[in-house]
Length: 232
Image (cartoon, rainbow, N blue to C red; front, side, top):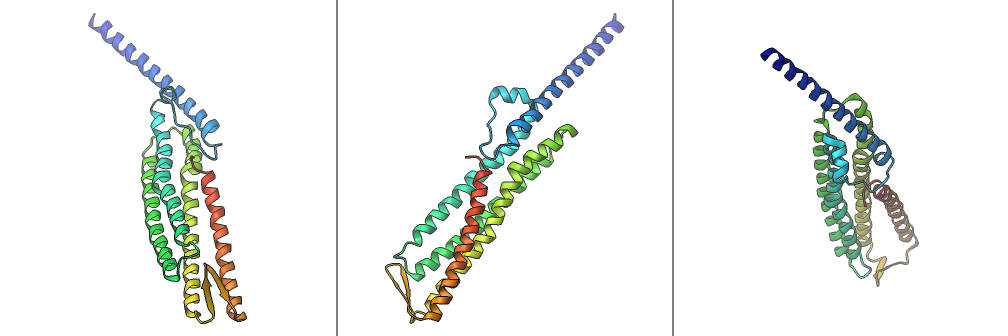
């Protein structure tokens, strides 16, 4: 009797093990299909899984959470502060603002940008550490890597490229303001408009302004790319 009972337990254990393996395989296939059809092709707006979807993915739902959590953190801790910083800067650079006010706003922007970059680096490091800890079958690894590259590393890299370009523009803006101060006898600022009578000074001023505008256009293009790659 004991031998038969032991055999029954062994058989039951095998059946449960096979059932568990079959369930894991179904969850894995469902998750891989979701990544391939719904996540990787998307340029914006990550899907938030429902309870039904999470049940369908099983433990793999937590792996998708790493992507969603990173994007949520970047949106709240980087995207929103960056947008506010840009709005505040535009307000501070209103036509009636003096040279000293403009310089103070520019320096503040650069300092705040450094803090935002630090936050970005911290969130990316946290996400990469979390991702590295996942145990994944080979079938899932390649597909999951595509999703991570598209929705974690690419947005982070795009933002990282924007920051030095923005700093470059701000430094050029400071140079322009210093140029205005150094040539205050030749340059008149009235109602937010710069008036220059000396042709040589005017030509240099125009070159500096054109250079700043070119850099600003490049930053705007990078910002557009970033907005297209992150959830709304």
